Image (cartoon, rainbow, N blue to C red; front, side, top):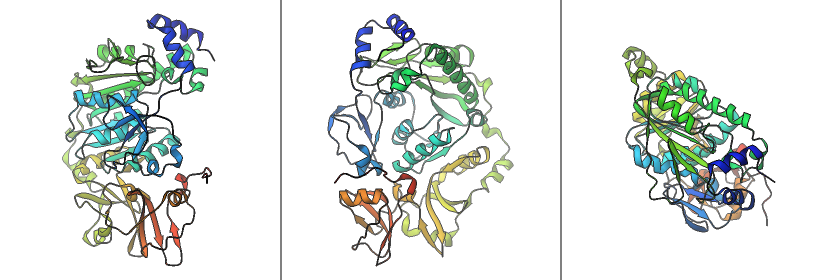
Length: 454
């Protein structure tokens, strides 16, 4: 397989060592890297060395079959390309962690969202958006497994979120791109590459950026990234934001990391110079106040009415869920028939989003009240706020994989009623033990579909 001719010609002009670049793309396997969940700390994989620019991130010595690792399903780690983890270093250099409202605009499958959930403390609200519904499901699943309640997932167009004037302190746009940086991992990206598609992607990126800009607070931040190399999708878009849209480009310090290339408007990662794939990232600060009206300027009466839309559990209703919860500082409320939980100091922000965005899922779901008792949701088994003193059963590897396939497994040692099932101390989900049988409540749509080797 050869690189597209027009792509070769451009990269020959762009790089000092095109032959080294081409050799890596066409002849070397991509490195495998993962990032551990700092709140579900269970380091167990064969590690080669750390990813220097991201805490709790490592290159692996080999690519295991992640599907057959129960700790993967428990949300103890996320398989993420190393270059894209540089987001954490950018956050460290420029973004405080206290009480922010953050949007990950093009969030699926969830790598950057889960990274930000680890970086920001529970005082910050993370909104993860994915407009494509099939990709949204994957995003939601990965975020649920991470276990945080200080998050919201939405599926909305950038223009709809852009209508939230001055709402976000930080917006991250990992923009849909021509995928040049993924040629080594994805031959399809190479086959579909063309100069016309690069131009199409650049125009789409500019449209997405233009739509979302009003939602960024004055002096708020925009982080823009792609997995591509060309200036049209990268530097030219940042130049446009700087010259025409009221943003100041901030200079990222890369002095501690060999191989990362600085451009006039950001940082470029090349796979022959660093251990990772092609990636571009830039951070800007919004300086032109004429583009944004702050949403907090709306009349208080309207906001008060909006707050009434959250149906908070009363004292008697909360008693029905008390055994399942660890954190009494959360707000528990009805979302249709489900009971959800979100950090209490996000109520005002949540109701604004709920009124503006049609497709929205708030926090994590505890479950539903049926026959005067809680039927717990799988989301709550994954939650960091589930009561860890609930009855549980520790499974061995074979039992855990059968459970994750949603097979019937009889657990004689289980207590009657609801039990958490665990593998190596990490929650996998719920079972209900009825004495003569044990019902498996792992989500059907998440089950392992492949055969398990003996």
